[in-house]
Image (cartoon, rainbow, N blue to C red; front, side):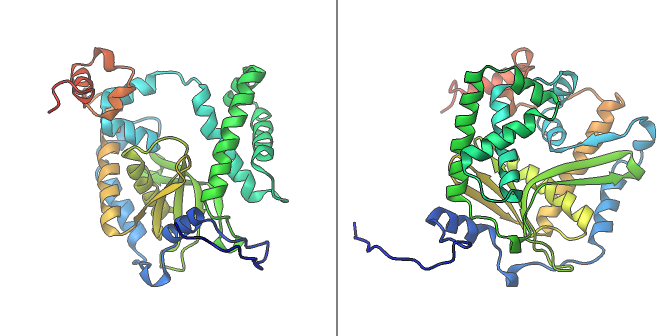
Length: 324
C-alpha cells in the first residue's frame, strides 16, 4: 500500500470536503445538464388520458374512491390473494417498523433544523416529535419499556451516522425537500394515486428534467423498489408536468445508491404496470374476478402462504429442494 501525506485543508466549513463514499453518491445522483431530457408540454395530459382509458368502463360502478399507493400496487401485482389479505388485516406496529419511521423523521429534521445536531440529538428530537403526535405510532412508542426505546434510539443513531458519513450534505442550492406528497386524481377523483417522496434534490428547468427522487432504505434491497420509484416518477410527471431526471434508492446500511435514468421507455413501463394494476383493483372490488394466486418472493412473509399450494411449492424450491 502507498503512503499518504497529511494535508491541511482551507475549505470553508459551510462546504466541508466529502468522504469518498459521499463523493461517489454525489457523482451518481447528479446528472450532467447536457444529459437531461426536455419533454413535450403535452406529456402530462397524454399520460392521464392513457391511464383513464383502461378503467373508463369500471369507475362508474364504484361508490367510494379507490386510493392507490405503491403498497397496493406492489401487493396486487405480486399476488391478488396477498392484496386481499393485507386489506382485510388491521395494521399493528412492530419494533422493526419503527426504526425506519424514526430514521426518516431524523433526516427530515436534519434538513430543516438549525443549528446542526448530532445523530443522537436528532434521534431524541425525532422521538419527542413522534411521541407527541398522538397517533398509533406515538402510542406504540409510549408503551414500550425504557430498554426497548433505548435500543431503538441506539440502532437509529447508528443508521443516521452511517447516512451522514456516506450521503453528501444537502446544500440549499440543491432545493432539497423531504416527505414531498404527490396526489393524482383520475376520473374526477374516482381513482386517487398517491405517494410521498422521502427526499428530492434539484428541480425542473421549464420542460427540462432536473429533479432527483431518492428513497432512503433502512433494509435490504428487493426488486420492487425499482417499481416503486417508477410509480413515483409517474406521479411526479402527472403533478408537475415534467418527469424527474433520475430515480435513486439509497441503502443506508451499506451506504450505497442504485440509480436509474428516467426516459420515455421507463415512463411507458410505469404506465402499463399502473393501469393494469388499477384495473385489477377495481375488478376485485366489484367482485368481477376471483383473486389470482401468484408465487413470488412475497410468499416468504405472506399471511396466506401456509394454505397456498403455489406459495408452498415456490418456498420449497427457493429453500433448496429440487434446485440443480
